[in-house]
Image 1: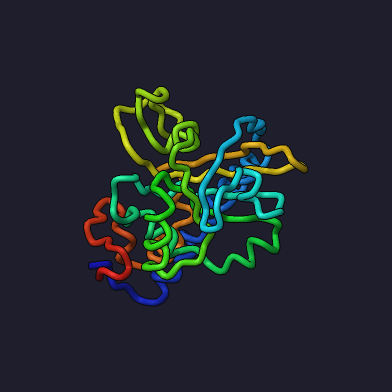
Image 2: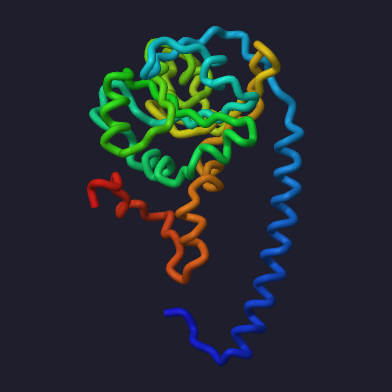
Length: 221
């Protein structure tokens, strides 16, 4: 149990913690600035996806906006449902109009075929655009499907001894008809977008990240 103290001591310790929080915020702002200044790579490969309205290119995924954030949702073609961890992340996503107002589109991409994706999306009550990359090299090129027979295995910019589906997010910028890859994050690097975890970080019990055995799809609690 957390120590119980008098209000004066609590205030003193809270002010000391505030100083540390401000140091952390300053350090993180420097990282945010460096992220914005990261150089980009032109995407020349012609990826083709399957959406609810048919075939789509990477350019189509922008929906006419200048920026695109792709969440690589773990959904292997052999699975009957999407990853519960990825589902937890998507449950955290707010109203997309706020992103759209900043000229940014958010879309999910998975390797499962679209006829598995759409029923699962309906079950979860989501309306986000979701595309299948089944049959393309997209997941392998962005290191979220690990298969040594297709491409050298790398995750989070390191060689790993793993295989199969992994989570991640990739950011793209469009200049007219040309697409650039600006940023990708994997694993713990996605903690920023797990807003429920950030809420739990404000609480005495915290988020208990080491043990995710409690986690379910939201309709399975």
